Amino acid sequence: MPSSSPSVPGCCFSFFSRKNRQQGEPPKAAISTSGYHAEVKRNIPSAHQHLEPCCSPTQGFMSASVKPFLDDLPAYSSDGKSLSSDVRETIKATIESYRAPLTAISLYISDNPELAYKEYKSSAKLISFLESEGFAIEKDYKGLETAFTATYSQGNGRTWAFNSEYDALPEVGHACGHNLIAIGGVAALLGVRAAMKKHGIDGTVVLMGTPAEEGGAGKVLLIERGGYKGIDGCMMIHPAGFTANSGGVLPTLAFQTIAVEFFGRTTHAGAAPWDGINALDAANISYTSISALRQQLHPTDRVHGIIVDGGEAPNIIPDYTSMKYYVRASRASGVEELMAKAIGCFKGAAEATGCKLKFKTEPITYDLRNNKLFGEEYASAMSELYNVPIPIELGEGTNPGASTDFGNVTYALPACHPMFGIPATLGRGNHTKEFRDKCRTEEAHTETLHAATAMSIVGARFLSDSAFAEDATEWWKDDMKS
Ligand SMILES: [Zn+2]
Ligand SMILES: [Zn+2]
Image 1: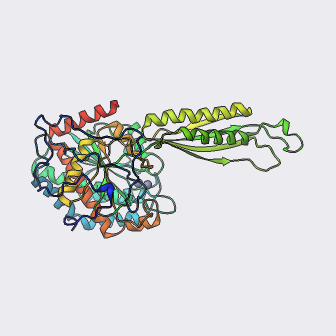
Image 2: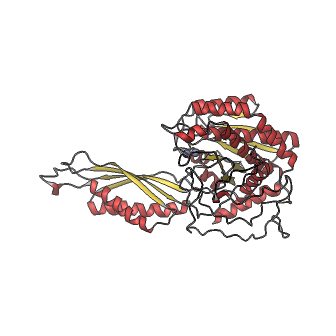
Image 3: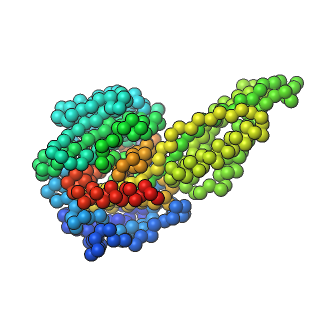
């Protein structure tokens, strides 16, 4: 159905189209005679260059303010060809054949929303299906009760992983569409296994069930505990409130939280105010200092916070206040710099008021450093199989606003996290009840299986094409230097 007339959601997605290419044919503008290492002229926006706001009709949580700067960027190809059309067809047909059970699992997860680290029913449902399909299962992965792996191996070779999320949000349930992410990973796993068996591709493919994305940073814990050791490449897909037949490989912001406490001394605010040390003044000065700091921030940076405790009664000088802040920037390094400035504001306020200061920061959730080669292979598959144009934005110039713990995965190994469009009502994208309901429709499941097919194709190519795998890894190493 979507292979005939894509509904392009405005200027953001009107580029990177290769819809007229035949399947299996090398990309037209693609291969330079000097090979794929040849420099490609690109107009990459600088780190904080202003870009036009997206005209996507819903904008979801990810305002895809991307500019068509990759028009002349060829798709990656190590030998002028991607996977053979036979392998692609095996993957596509296999995934489509599982549509009914995968849809049932997705709706079950949506019907049973569970919060971070409490995804007992959802993980059990996925595990029981994967066990029945003959995958080797490891439960309680790295000591996390709701994390697991499902593995298929044959011969010797590289190891590729997909990630499935299945945690929900408070109040609004599966309003981020993680029920779709869950089955997207399963579908991609089934596709790669079928390709390995039928076409003699050696290696290992793993599905990692990763809990606690919506708070809890489950993947950060898994990385710390060695959960990604031995994995050579990794992908996951995420739905967004765009339109059907849309999506993108887009960055997200890095972020870090800080909890702050000020300790002063109580006194009667009317009778003896001079005997007090006012902790609310320290919170107030912090808030004002950070508001002044905000004027000097780059357009992509964010500092936002609240006063959690502000005192007990107007006639008591407060001896205790607490605050919570989020600091966001387009790179993890930017978060570190900005956090140092915010901490300076808290220290200054403590000094000015005579209060004692305590603060605690959580680990940084990194920005997404999507692997260019994986993104291009994914875009190529989406274009050729489904006529869906996928813009690729690898720079820091956009202002997506959201963050994900998969960002840390992209720093740990070559990895990619494309977004795919779910038709949503204007202004009712991710984290709304309306979007939750859209993520239960047949159309949403079709979009998920298409994105999962494209992701599965990237995995199969990574296992079967050594040059592609090596170059993706080299690209990642270079990217980590910047
Ligand atoms: Zn979310
Ligand atoms: Zn999400």
